[in-house]
Image (cartoon, rainbow, N blue to C red):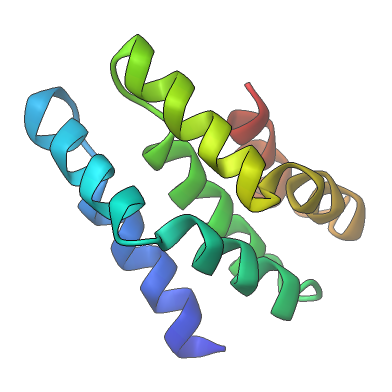
Length: 108
């Protein structure tokens, strides 16, 4: 679980920031198949608030960008099955402010 959490953490940092470089990094992450892997982490570790939070941050960063990219990446995340897992994370961790915050950011 630690390796998967750190992998989500790395994806967060790769796709953080703004501008053309961030957009290119986010596109590369999507092209390499990261979204289904993030979903797999959420499925495998539903009881881990830290894992759910980190996965949500990764989803937020990947689905941020130009309007066209944001829409395409958000649809790819939905297609990968992320939406019900984000809601499940909120339900599983109602006392975790970090999970609630990042899940809300993911859904916005």
